[in-house]
Amino acid sequence: MLNLKPEVVAQLERVLGSVEMLLPRTVKPVDWSVCYAANWRRHSFSGYLEPVKVTDTTTLAELLGVEEQKEVMIHNTRQFLAGLPANNALLWGSRGTGKSSLVKALLNEFAAKGLRVIQIEKEDLIYLSEIFNAVEDQPYRFILLCDDLTFEVGELSYKMLKSALDGSVYSPPENVLIYVTSNRRHLLPEYESDHLGGKFVKGEMQQSEAMEEKVSLSDRFGLWIAFYAFSQDRYLDAVRLAVAREARERKVEIPVTKELEREAIDWSHEKSKRCGRTAYQFAKNYVGRYLLPRYSL
Image 1 (cartoon, rainbow, N blue to C red):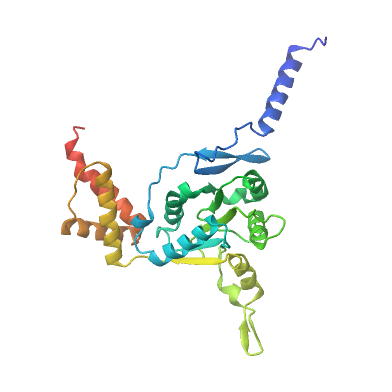
Image 2 (image 1 turned 180 degrees about the vertical axis):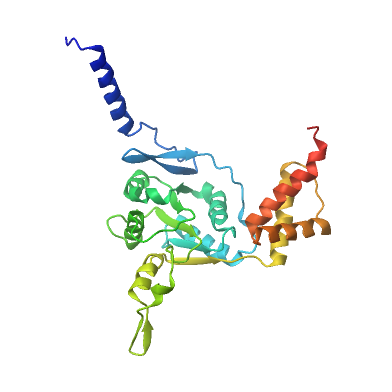
């Protein structure tokens, strides 16, 4: 038996502790029969799927001002669930207009029919193949969601996503679709200089090499779904719906008055944005102030 000095034993314990931190975590496989959503969590040189409790109860009917977008995404998702051809989708446009909420609403609508969602951060797209391997034999249909995605030129995760959408060695199995939300249509920043270098070929203007590269990723999504800021009338519709929802959850009735609408418009001016997110934030503020006098705080 080795007779080690205490300082050597302490050093070995520190080394073993450091090595243990680098080893993959031992986690139970996700039980997709009761879990509808999961996040990919990076750990050391790999990662794991972490079940999450779905708390967002948004329904498709509650999403206003995006009727055309809903129709396209509902049809595409239903095709996917039926095992029919369906497209990866890029939901792009103005912030707060319902891109992420639409995906969550699709999960709430179709979870009972076998739809599941895995959310992944941009930095973890390098682990796409591991995620695909983890779910390819599952009897469910998975939406891989990358929310609020933008890239800078040269990022490795950009190339990994491009390869997956290309159908290369990283291509997803038949039970996985990729839905991405972004404020940018081409997912990369565009500069005035990018448009220099274009040329006419047989009478038609061809894009510069810089622009060709920047549109090459978004071109790989079969669906481009655009979202725009609301008109004032549509924004007020969203406010009424959001206030009613907050009131219903607290089992109270809150009248929608002209004063409420004026406050909602002023709120949108302060935010410089008319959209579903602004309407929801206003509703939380208004309903909270409306009900606070009933509490002795």
